[in-house]
Image 1 (cartoon, helix red, strand yellow):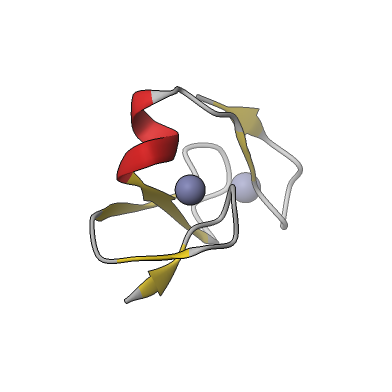
Image 2 (cartoon, protein in one colour):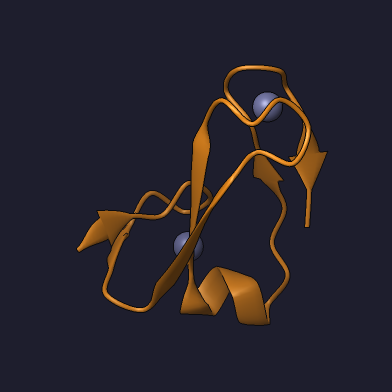
Amino acid sequence: MKVCSTCNRESQDYVEFRCPKCGKTRIVRCENCRKTAKPYKCEECGFEGP
Ligand SMILES: [Zn+2]
Ligand SMILES: [Zn+2]
């Protein structure tokens, strides 16, 4: 289980990747946020993306 970076809910179905801009933080996105294309934000550099 991981906490989704966007909705802060725990999810078993998620993707995890590094911030495409700074590469420092790991972004976790649950299936639901992926499907609905919710934006995420990097804590480190403030990058926002789908
Ligand atoms: Zn989510
Ligand atoms: Zn970043």
